[in-house]
Amino acid sequence: MTLRPHRHYIHWILEPPHDHRIGFQWYTESASVAFMLETLSTHAEIASVGRARFAGTTAQKNALWREFRNYMRQALSNFQAAQGVPNRSAGLLYYYAALNFAKAELLDSNAPALVDRRIGHGLSFSPTRAKTVAGDTLSVTTGVFPLLYQRRTGIQLPIGTKLPVKRLLQQVPELSSQVDAVGLGTSHIGGVMQMLAWDDREAWSLLACPEPNPLKSFGGVTATLFNRFFEEVAEPQEWRDHFGVSRRWPWDVSFYESRRKVPVGRTHDEPEGARELSADIRQILGMRTSEDYDAWLAPSLYKTRMLPMPPSMARYALTYYASSLVRYKPQMFDPASHPEQAYLFDAVSREVALPMLTDVLAAIVGQPVYFYSTGGLRL
Image 1: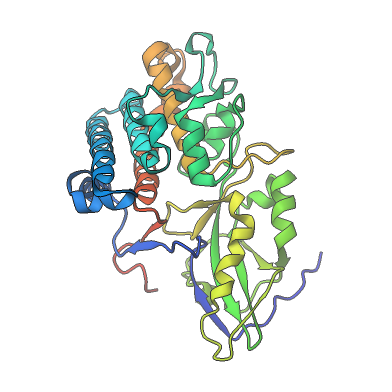
Image 2: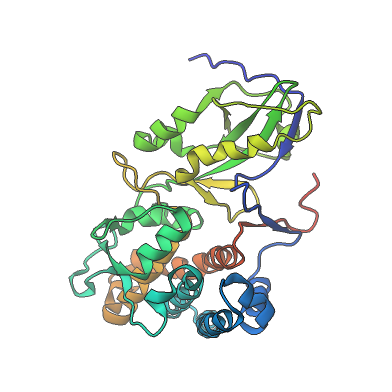
């Protein structure tokens, strides 16, 4: 099929997809556990920082911040302890960290459900019935998980929703090689780079999707949503220079132009309206945790009905699953009888920790966070 030429643009800027109303934060250093723990600790230990997230009188803010800082302290302690555990056994400590981080995150919007209340995990799973990772499923219940999901996605997750563990693993980009190695299929996540382009009349979004491209392999409701708002177009000339991509880039790339255009002002300055265009597909976008991309393209968990599952929520659910098996059925990770599962969940503990902390930092500061290694802003 011959693709339509892309629309000619005169100006362009590179900017990650994000909610233009809240903006984003970026740092000129690589993501590290040490940096994020230090930054998060300021919210737990400095009143003026931690208290700023809460509304109400000073007394009300102080009361909530006291709850918040103790959840944060527990989370930070558990996360730091988990860093010293060399294998999948760390999953238990990482989940306790994730749970306490989640409660701290939810306090400004769900305090009545948390303060002086017992709240469930929001996920259920019977470890005694567990047989294989490929066949296990989590169920959504009342508690932390659906509240966290709604806060991060803006979508209410029905109680009783089934989350197959195999599909959750395929939604976590940093586990793609391990999931493939143990025969659980290929990753459903792809990277996205965005350019905001404009001429003398209109502005639009131009996305670059490197291979493997989940839009072409996964299809279904994800492709239907994406194709409603973006159209594949021919490769722009000098796309590497315009997208800021090194000539060492080895993968094929597909390009998609937003169907919707927004008018530009008389001065032809940066078109503010173009920043809204990525919101059309926000259900299938996740915050990036790799400097190679601007965002993750995260298909619906199900092919025939839309169930957004950004990597941040898949990581949380998998950490819960791993902790359940570590507590109640550790033989599922026995390297002699289940070497693939032991290998995979060693990788879960090792690879998911830093991206999960990035998710938490973004949630606590209230903006996406982007890290660029020293010198990474120049080719």
